Image (cartoon, rainbow, N blue to C red):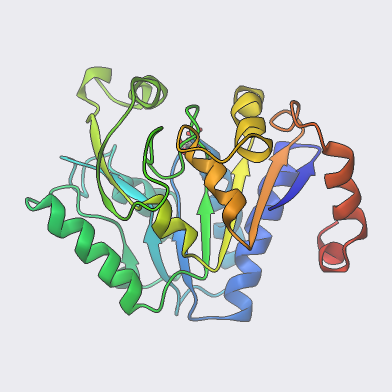
Length: 261
Ligand code: PGA
């Protein structure tokens, strides 16, 4: 796990977007794993600007999102399909036929998970998986207690996640209590993982995920087992990390970060 701390949220977001854009430049037909949530909106803003400026071309990219609420269709403003169209896909030159999310209206839940896994495998696997972290330490909707080898499936959300996300629903009680999510095992199969964590409210869970024990109680901690994960934090989210000086040292000295400093 590499840990990079940037002084401001904007700089953490900028670095995340640049790493994603550089992936696409190096491999135009790459497979991106994408995430939703408030944190990612700023990342997608940057990618949209880069695409409009002709700096990055998404025409050959295939994407797979982490998760989708069960019971919400693509036209529901709270579905993650709607979020992705609204924040990214409608504004870049990606072919929407190559963008994938679990179908929140799937009747056969078991089959939906199996089919989503098969689609990822048929595409050749995910090159880079973008992740945020929930207040309860989840990645995707892999809530505490999720198997660290889980695959895409239906999952009941925790009350913590419910409270975190119901504010976006009107009325708040209309938020679904279940979702389809890639599993922790699915995420760990990605070639590279980029986890972006910003804001003071994430400081405690960030420290547990990065420096605490690997445990299904904080599914993001499973990324410690992944050979190619970079965690990007702003200073507020990094506040409770104990090895800050070392992380800064690595970023300042590793040749591969030269162009990003
Ligand atoms: P947030 O969500 O970006 O809205 O904080 C992240 C998550 O729950 O994974």
